[in-house]
Length: 169
Ligand SMILES: CC(C)(COP(=O)(O)OP(=O)(O)OC[C@H]1O[C@@H](n2cnc3c(N)ncnc32)[C@H](O)[C@@H]1OP(=O)(O)O)[C@@H](O)C(=O)NCCC(=O)NCCS
Image (cartoon, rainbow, N blue to C red; front, side, top):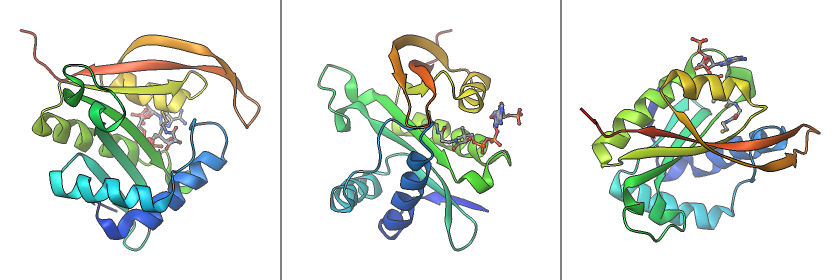
């Protein structure tokens, strides 16, 4: 297993992973956007070294983690460029082997280098593996969304979580 920065040529395989995880119906609110749009975004990611990483098994992408500045996610308020928004997905055949943890550690370290002051994410309360992972890394709950029924039939709600990257002492 190798972890490295995403490259333009990874886009089709990354989107296929995103689509497979979305199709499980239990973890992600949205499926992948059109490939042409993602290609434009990843060009910026590569140029500006925005923290986006892939895990590969040598030939295939088996995990991705991405942290985007708020300004790339529609936020316009002061400081939005210093708030990172994180997503992570591991192929179902490769979960529980430490890959998610390793990708998160790399994303957090690179987010500090990039200048993010915090990392934000949303996770469904039914997604206990993800919540345990985030809690273990120091993420704290910030808000709760309304109840939803996921395509897999699970009734749950999303919670916001944040990790501060700014030292307070
Ligand atoms: C959540 C996810 C990223 C975790 O990645 P992973 O590679 O399976 O996790 P790891 O093997 O690195 O485990 C890291 C920690 O996560 C937690 N965890 C992982 N699998 C777990 C499980 N089945 N039950 C409970 N906790 C679990 C544990 O705290 C674990 O640490 P430990 O092994 O020391 O106890 C992965 O399961 C995934 O991609 N799920 C589907 C997509 C998704 O939920 N994305 C996040 C949306 S917010």
